[in-house]
Length: 65
Image (cartoon, rainbow, N blue to C red; front, side, top):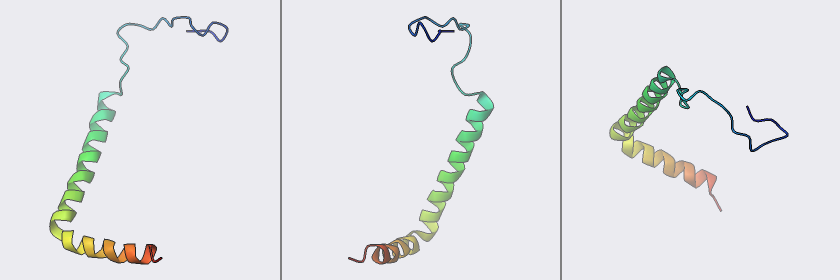
């Protein structure tokens, strides 16, 4: 472990220690993001035109200069 007095000291970590997230966390995040993306694709496919009309109406209300 590098000390405060010598910031350039090399830390002696075990060579087999992983620097990544645990596998369960990675899989959970991947599945959650995939579910969100699938939901977004579904909404665009089913309600695409209505979403565009709603966004246009919201844009008119927000940016009414």
